[in-house]
Image (cartoon, rainbow, N blue to C red):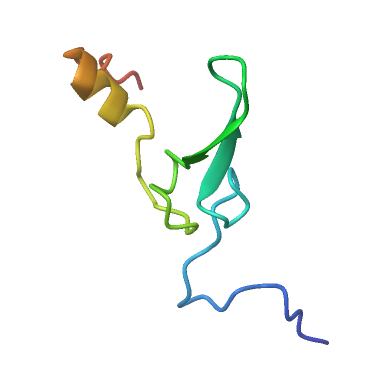
Length: 70
């Protein structure tokens, strides 16, 4: 069995799948592209477990999160 060098070690954090580990995204909000920090990894480029990317926006708007459903 061969080892895959592209697979991170279990003790290393996984790269963010949204920004592909760059920590930034291209936003077209406002009509022109601009580079913005990734809300899902907070610009770190690493996967953050149990992270709510929408939480900061809700807090800024004064909204409360919807009730959890099971």
